[in-house]
Length: 385
Image 1 (cartoon, helix red, strand yellow):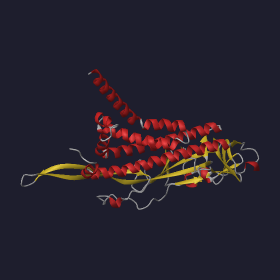
Image 2 (cartoon, helix red, strand yellow):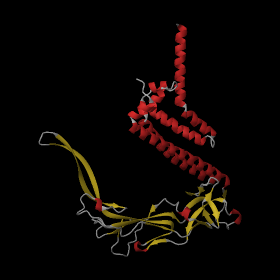
Image 3 (spheres, one colour):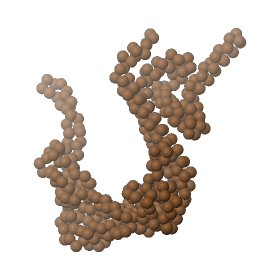
Image 4 (cartoon, helix red, strand yellow):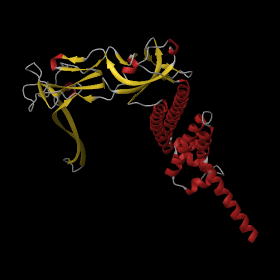
């Protein structure tokens, strides 16, 4: 019996509706990601063509004002970052204080078991077992939501909060690093100090400062503190940004994209942009994978409708009959994904866009070749008869 598309949709309207929603979500994600990737690549190429390398230790030149510049050299700061209570003093761009509290944690283990009632019927019952353990946690755990609250109360607030100190003035040569640039220092190293704090209620053990009576047997509410630094003075860095009044700030491209690059070590302009393109590709492929996965989930929900439409097509009928439902779903989701990618890249990089376009239509080309092969076989059979 021939079933129409409308009838098939009515039969599986729940999964079909979910599939349609997922389809548009995947479509939006891939479109946004490819547009972002193309704009970012275009902006990087524009910046690469405009950047000039200068010596950061030379006197600041007015002719470089508003220009995109590349500098490298050691970091310097105006004053050390300190934590007096812990005897910490370090000259770096950032000093991070990490605070953890010893708290109750609830763990739930679901379990199912069957009972026999008085009539002799089996009754399945869901039950949960709750366990309570103590752990060091960075964030406050709300014990008011525990199943058994009595005897498992956590403090209502942290006595000391995590914090990041940022150097007021950081330089490379004579050029000052902007706040946006200082935020890019994220490769933290642990401060391994051995100086005992003056306060008697603070104990140092293996580089960690404990606010407790007994390091080996902490109590709920006790805290411990660790310190990390990023951008130590003397560390060699390479920077690309716009020079403005002696400060390195973000450079705005014609596409509205901000360029402000930081790499550790001495790198040339080409090396920095190569690394930036590499990082951008990794991020783009992560989102591409997510988009393809969403479209694949959509096609799984719409398998019956897609198969019905393919069976009505002369070209795609052979693929629908020869392949399983999961393979058809994967082929459809991959083709749609490649089609979106090719549309985004065909203007910026024609060869890449054309290759993606050919890959997108490969299932249809395969089906067409199968159809042509079948026609040739039938023609030969008729001719031999």
